[in-house]
Amino acid sequence: MPHREGMAIHDLSAWRHEHAFDAGNRAGEARTWLVVAITAVTMVAEIVAGWLTGSMALLADGWHMGTHVAALAMAGIAYALARRWSRDERFAFGTWKIEVLGAFSSALVLAVVALAMAVESTIRLVEPRPIDYGVALAVAVVGLVVNVVSAFVLSGYGHDHDHGHDHGHDHGDEHGHDEHDHHDLNLRAAYVHVLTDAFTSVLAIVALAAGMLAGWAWLDPVMGLVGAGVIAWWARGLIVQSALVLLDREMDSPVASRVREAIESDGDAEIADLHVWRVGRARHACIVSIVARAPLTPDGYRGRLAGIATLAHVSIEVNRCPHERCP
Image (tube, rainbow, N blue to C red; front, side, top):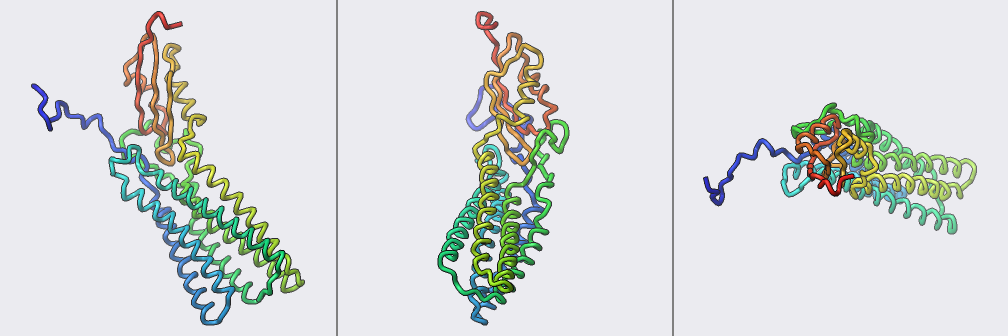
């Protein structure tokens, strides 16, 4: 029967599958928005109290909380956008990397905060300013309590195993034990935000108490520099982790090695070209070009990869090696 425009010759539904490789982290998204709400309420309370009492310390900390609301909301928005567009076929390998992009952006915000802290602390070392220790201590304690509660809400980010196995391409163990790092980077970025704020609150409490009791006013900006250094270190770690995922640096992962070992296990097939990249927290896509003297069908080679649990999408090209080119 001749092909007619608008009509398919074959029913291709058996060979098609969804490209939503990661189902998202609904629990993480909910926890993130809860922390946004907690931080926003604290922000408003401090700004109102600062305005009514004339306390610049309360006002400053209230606006500082505002930057954390913005950064945490960024993580929540990344979750929402990834979920909203998860079925949009224009995203060839799903929308999970929107969450990673959110983590990368949050890490950049952390780096800017660290730089601002370092600059302000240096200025205060050179030009000391009078400190209202009583009010400042109260603000630091409130900030510490809020951030400890927020950190508790966000804790456990590294143990989320909602990997999205509804696309029909699971290969073996559904929890993907080939993947050594199942962290939700977006949730981790939110967690680091509140953790760094809690850490700086502790440093501030120590410095303010020493200043009030022993007159060590210099300790406050020194602790600011220490906090800036620690935040910069954590921000660097997040930037590196999220950037490597965004740039698809996966060829040194155990998954790439296992693909090569499985395909070349018969001593005949050789991989001429291999591309592995991440499409979910514990999901990988793979394109492999195979050369062999007596090649199998693509399904035959696909079967060799069945034990690699994290492979969610595999494209295989098979080439017969001409005898004059074979060793």
